[in-house]
Image (cartoon, rainbow, N blue to C red):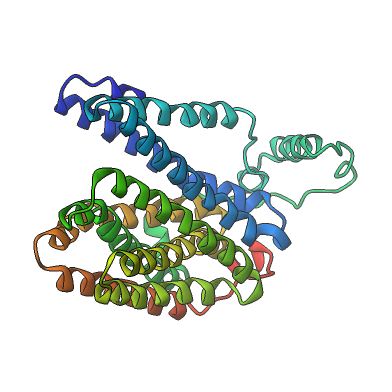
Length: 346
């Protein structure tokens, strides 16, 4: 990301941004799969939602930085500083990964019981209780064959894979379709650039209540209902945004939409890794992330209709994508709340 800020040409900027996306796309699926395997059952749902909520924290910081940098320097310099500063957390994340052991579940499945024991002991020491698991015998390792994405489309996993792919695709299509173009839409409506940055910052803050509510609901009503419910609210909010008139109502409806969609993101990141066995958990997360990225590629073209006079058509498509995703989430039919991973994925 830092290299993107130093890019002398548009071509090199695009190459640098491609590499940034490639790297992030490879790390996120692994992160959530590993955390699902490390965290105790009672905390797993809310923990994964809170983990995803740092997306909103980062959005708030970046939006605030963009607003500030644009106010103190020329726009042609501000974006370079913004990219450079945004690279610092990625460096911290890289260093943090060196201190995280491999998943004991994964190691046991590969017959590497000594490394699994070492990983468990490392976690115990990190929590200040080195002897907590000393006398506990780890489950006998189950040998697991090498897996591929094709294994997700066979047997009992095929239904979950297809329906979850629809959820991720529909959520991503609508989310990026709306919010990628929203600043441009606001500018086209006559809003000053400084006000656009301020609105973006406020919408980022609106994401936090969505995450907090999702963290509560995934344990209070269950993962499946939470994902489907937030997506349904997203579909309704899209039409409320369409009918909004005046700056205040536009801000209110877009804030509601932002909260609903980020609540959906948080809960789907908690739900998805729980639905697959350890042997394919990271593969499944990678496949779902790929479905979301495909939608993200399509979304800007549809979102362009927001600023070319086809607002109603564009938002109808996005509302429909949320509605289809909600139906798909509910149709999965499996609830993972309060269950050991093996109970759900066996």
